Image 1 (cartoon, rainbow, N blue to C red):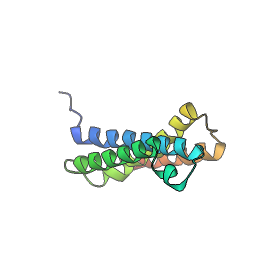
Image 2 (cartoon, helix red, strand yellow):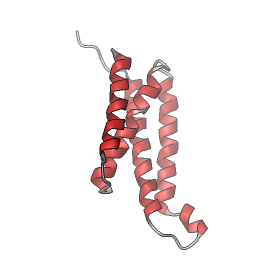
Image 3 (spheres, rainbow, N blue to C red):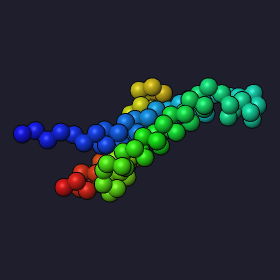
Length: 115
């Protein structure tokens, strides 16, 4: 018999995706020059980025209602890797050896945790 994936874990992975997309939007906004302090923080990219962050927070809260608390931070750490991958493909950011080493260490930690 197959074991079904707990929907709360899917919520947590969804939260990681929302949070990562939020970071990309905020990075896009930070790359642009803004005419004033107000425009720097009240532009569509920033508002959408913070909106996604609120959605990610609410999704995380929902996820914690049905999963062990010990798993949350481990799953959320995958967000660092997703931001790097999205930044590489969408923002054409450079991926250095140090970054790859750091992300490999994160992955190793996740794998060791679940052994």
